[in-house]
Image 1 (cartoon, rainbow, N blue to C red):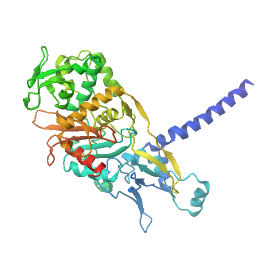
Image 2 (image 1 turned 120 degrees about the horizontal axis):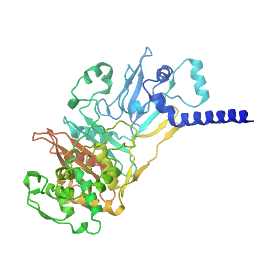
Image 3 (image 1 turned 45 degrees about the vertical axis):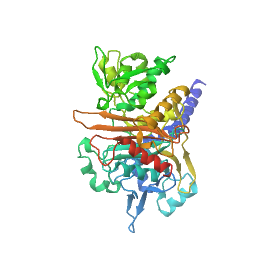
Image 4 (image 1 turned 90 degrees about the vertical axis):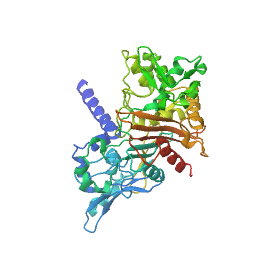
Length: 464
């Protein structure tokens, strides 16, 4: 009996393993570049299409008169980082890589499979419909111009990524001829780096969102009474002198006005007074130094404050300088969580997968990372971000018919006079439908700052 139960147990365990493998792990295993099963699939399955949110084709497989297949990207550079590419050597990036399992999966209809086998023809792989919007992507790409940088936007309430653009870019159709040239570029000029999700930058004043929230929590009973008299610079004994942009003296300010004016003097002073343990915990809640729950390649944002951090480091961190580094993706997620009443949603770029006959195989649904702040905190920060636009540094959208909220940032990154330009925000502020983050790397030209790129995206979204 013992032996019988043992073998029954092994049988049940094997069944459970097979179920778990097929449901959870099969896609990951097949996507592994070292798995030769991919090669066998490509020999009998025509790679499926990748589609925009409205069904527009972003990637497809063409077959010439001799039966030779080639991957075609109708929009060239436009979706090169989000959709990615697949090459003749098997190299894959972007959605081409993450959804490789489904793109090479044939229909589950047994009769269709038998028909393909008997005819000797190739089956058609599944089609992947993304959350990406073509018009928004065109607008973002054009607004970046020739500048290095990135734009990323999503629905705050769902996490659907609406556009993801990075520059410098490349024509995905040229991967088989130009890839060796692309990989020789210096890292600063790399066309293969997706700056929207992998680019790490000092966040500058956009980090004042975190600093303000840390202050609110540390002074929950009287943060409304905050006041600061700015004379253009701030010195703290044992620390350093922090100047406001152009040494502007902002005068008397409450917290919202200091935020709207992006007052370095006020926020460096706030930073120096923060409880380090609480501040570190807050940053952990917002996923600094942590993995992000996304299904595509990204870099971790870093916040380096420890219990041993000096006053100077706390001052610098309070204004988004020092050793703090962020991706535009992460910065957008934080702004979107404010727009979504304190709930951070998981960004996703694949809406659904269907087989060649249009039958649904997978439908992705919104999911929350978690509640990162209270509704009251989100409402107050929204008021602060709205004031940035109405009377502060976010003047680009001041006269727009939609009512935006956001935070600008200028981030110093070396000893030159160049600054990275940031904008992160959402619109409308009282019923958010879209959150946008833009980074323009230092030395940009042809556009005044990142907020004007964001304005173009907002304008396009709202039909202006």
